[in-house]
Amino acid sequence: MSSIVNVVLYQAGWLACVLGAAHGMPWAGVVAAAAIVAWHLSRAGQPRAEARLIAAAIVVGAVFETLLVQAGWVRYAEGALVAGTAPVWMVALWAMFATTLNVSLRPLRTHPWVAAVLGAVGAPLAYYAGARLGALQLADFHAGLAAIAIGWAWLTPLLLASARRNDGFTRP
Image 1 (cartoon, rainbow, N blue to C red):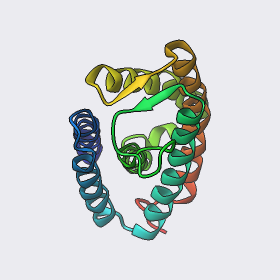
Image 2: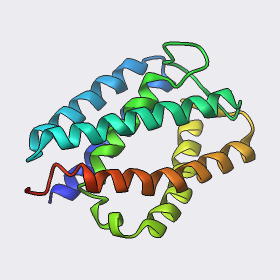
Image 3: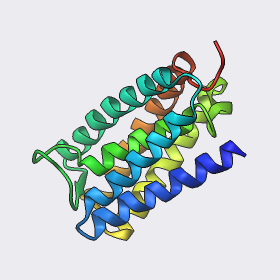
């Protein structure tokens, strides 16, 4: 049951972030994401471990998204605190993604190749959906989606490895 709730909350937060950015209200998604992350941490047996994982995902996500912006592959509609960097709502999505790693995506932790393939396929689809909803633009469509696929194919297993070390849902 917790995996279903985890997936539903992540998807609701994704919609809040993307639609908020698309409609000039990027902070609405950030607030929703913060509430989801707070709820997730309140459910963890070891919230500090989960908080470390979320912090790692925030750093990884902020760097990756900023690289996409700097390369000119992605343009975000709203929410960057500093021009040329990742918008806060996108970084909030990475924080929420981290909440799935030790819950609904737990089975992928021992299957890095499957995680890589799912990251390489799922992430470009999510970015494409975000672009269709108006939250971002894929400035160079093919190169942008390729970079996203390659990045997520590498970063998904990396974050899942971090999740094994920072598992707030397994008793010590």
